[in-house]
Length: 267
Ligand code: AMP
Ligand code: MG
Image 1 (cartoon, protein in one colour):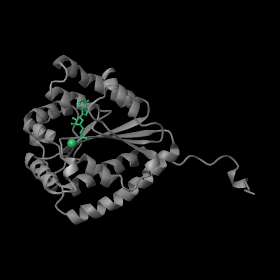
Image 2: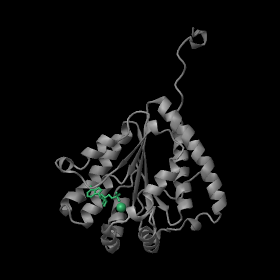
Image 3: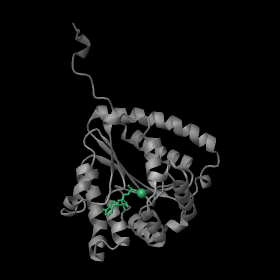
């Protein structure tokens, strides 16, 4: 199946021209949810095989604006996988030690090893997003990072890592509603910080930074997918489908039995 959310290589896009609404792609929520559950079971089976094969790696990168649904996607899509074979890394503001190194140092260290499925909740892309918008580094520093990122991702790709990069695309209005819910609902209060409102006021600057990130770092070895994410059910379904389709192509296999295994008697 052709994934409609993969950005075509070489074509310049603008987020403002891409839909945030899952209903533009699927108007039957019940059917999408039923398919999602089936795909999620299949994902668990594939992840088990990847782990058993113990050779290749899969890296999922999740980027989004605040309240874009990164945490929710991780919670729902990866529900059935074996935690032993999956490592989720959430990238926060760098520590002093991390800042003493190049920006990819902490990221490379978190890249999945053989047989592992790695999930990045935020990533090296923060270094061309928040760093740019908040002017944490001079322009020539973050401008150079697009190419550095492309080369880094090529290195991962060439050494056995399949990269799946998702940008969760929500509307300004949807973000307002989600922040409002975080303020009102006691079980969501912990997710809200006053920083969120500061970032919301920088919405336009972030959209511009996202556009540049998507256009500069959409390579054949690590293409971006822009997922319409206003509807959580569609977001989960679209991410899970992309993962399962990628796994079907990778087709990880259980290693062959040891020679003469059939003659072994366990006493
Ligand atoms: P959260 O995902 O809500 O836990 O927030 C993590 C915070 O860390 C966000 O405000 C990010 O912008 C920030 N962050 C992540 N990576 C970087 C980075 N490389 N430089 C500066 N801030 C970062
Ligand atoms: Mg936050």
